[in-house]
Length: 115
Length: 114
Image (cartoon, rainbow over all chains, first blue to last red; front, side, top):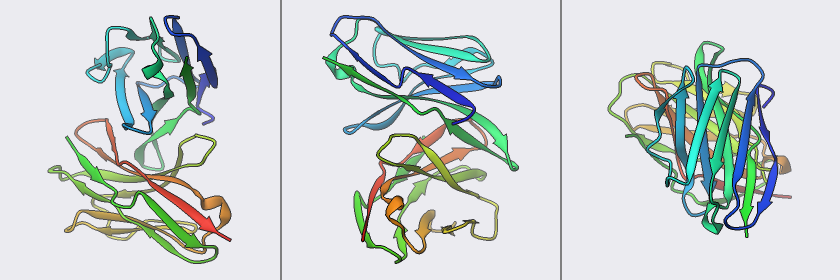
């Protein structure tokens, strides 16, 4: 995950609090994806950006979720107010071309626990 | 939308043996890529192997090989000489060239037994 750095690695928060997850790209990329992973639902695409513009946010579960990509090297996913059912691992990923084909590079993920 | 099916929620294999993890996909696209990712207990997603839909030869990466049967829409991962460190979740995924979104299967949990 040398190209994608997520912070924090772990976050524990109380229900009702605002949570901000961060994704930093070592070198700018055109496409960035936010995923949520739970045991029940597996990997779910929440939103993706192309050229810093949100293209498809149909996976964002509720208005409590919002995402921004102010520049090609940084993105945030915010949950306000958080709820226990938001507990999951959140990944950001970039699409890049390497060795002649496109592929995903994932960040290491943020494990969110809402109590 | 794509549909990726991994029918084996859990698999066990003896250390040093080979194991095959199944993956079938459903797509109407002519051009697509097939990927396998490994997710160990630490949580990170690790790219393992890629197969292009027009590649005639099966992809190989070290101990990983992909048994690609295009007509059957099957892309099984073969791990040879299993090691204890191979114990992890394994996800099959597709990417169409008409879009830039991945579709993931539900994963297979592999446990390597000493």
